[in-house]
Image (cartoon, rainbow over all chains, first blue to last red; front, side):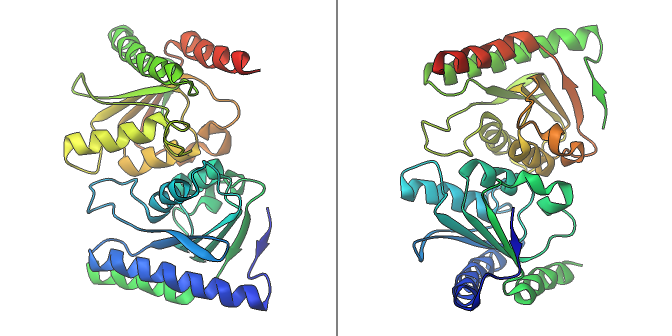
Length: 155
Length: 155
């Protein structure tokens, strides 16, 4: 597994663009009073799937942004595997979503903010597929601020 | 977390009955040429949700028996949490399904065969919710034989 803060300058521009799209998805979750987490999946520089947290709306704790994006992406690709795809997600995937990412063999995961409580990396970094590249810290402060603001309002 | 091989004699009878129902689900997967894994969720001694592996049929590597059963059970209950429920599944849950079980706060998980490759317990036993009881080894040989037979035929 390879961790970078970012790959190089041109990738950083693309990564920030796609993360801002994931942030738009997170905003849709916020508008529904859901924990604001959003995701997009990119294939050949095009967004092929989008998802935002719908746990409350669907009464389903498994309705995370990533899970919906994985299912939508495999539908789009017409295959089970996402080796050529990148997942952009505003928060570090939880164990469930990282476990799902393993099964899809997704090529790259780019996440914004770390999840110090339920992020997969706290439990075992080997949950992720050995061929999946992990990039962290893209638009980290915006991603983190959105979630922090949500929980502060709730208190 | 509490591990038992079984609770007591009357529970063992119930556990074997519900595991045999999970095995019927696994058989449905086998009939579709899917890896034969099945699950049921029980609430107040009644099966409220069923699921079997549909990864190939749905072209979706996240379509595990347990994931479908969790979503069906929360639909049935009309709430997000399954604290009063028991999941019976023929194979030890993978990281994804164990991570999903955490979010549902399910009361008890009973599984048949161990998964020495992708079972959650290899990665971190704390993936499971601290209030979830784990029971293993119910109809273990039947559960294991079904999966082993499937892979032997494939070779």
